[in-house]
Length: 231
Image (cartoon, rainbow, N blue to C red):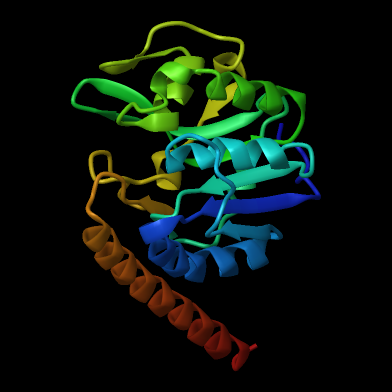
């Protein structure tokens, strides 16, 4: 049985340094999605010095917000919402606090923190604190995502689930449609994500996605007008 939709919802992202240009592009899909589904939009191009590489700003920022909102949706700066029709909050279940995609490819299984939905409150606060505490991954090639793997009971090299944890039992692995990547693409994505590419290549893919998304919205609007003329 699905939960009621939370009242206070925020869509959060950070684009620091050269990733500001990606966030500016992503915003053009984040903004209509947030407006349509009732999220406050919290986009940051500057964050305080956290003494760690920039990807860790995700954890620090979410930790600051976790008691201010009922629901937090994190989207990386190299993410594009290509299907705006469904709210990811439709995935909510009463006994789960964290929602993310597990990618499966080349014999590996790995959760991807580039798209994360989380409830506000004690459980998420404890989870984020535990992720931050994994200091052995501060300079890992996957940064905070390696720490998320560890806390959810995954081995990191190679990534695969090896044990249950108090956090993994209350995590829901959602459809790859919510985080479609090159190595594990969804045939009908709602969100596309471009980790592992150069900045230039990410920007090119995101421009393509924006054009296709705008074309889809224009067609939908035209169809609504057409239908309205005959009702």
